[in-house]
Length: 123
Length: 107
Image (cartoon, rainbow over all chains, first blue to last red):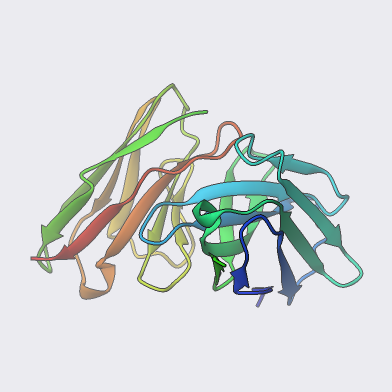
């Protein structure tokens, strides 16, 4: 059974860079049917898509975060990563990695999720 | 960006009740609409994709309908394990956007 697990610091100082890694186990990331995503959720609030990455390294970012986001993938280690620069308190929240199913029939949805990791931005 | 608006934001219901949650898109999204369930402290779980296609393993008391801009998630007979927050999400165009959520709690 495929699993995703986020890892990284739980506390980041304002203006610094948030870095998280998602390790995928139980399946290869190198499938043409899947992208890999980061989604975040501020405390008590809704869900915000951060970006998608394909195993080839192709990325798509949310325009609202694009100037601060970088995602990269390492298929040899079966993991992908997120970097978010110049963080503020507004970036505090639970960060999820997930698998984005993209079927040839144009059915796209997030089907497997990590447990999430809380990142707090504070000095 | 496509804005997704859910109503109500919260509702109180009893076990056995029929529950209906609506989701409206700011522009037509055909049937590119997914529904997720999230319990406290847990990651969301996909229930329905393509507006009405039930994911494997999801109980048949859940159903989805709609197309264009208006969509509905229905729980035909609410069970204790269904108390949770439900989100809709459009999958027609990036940035993929979610509704603000509907919290279903016990009356």
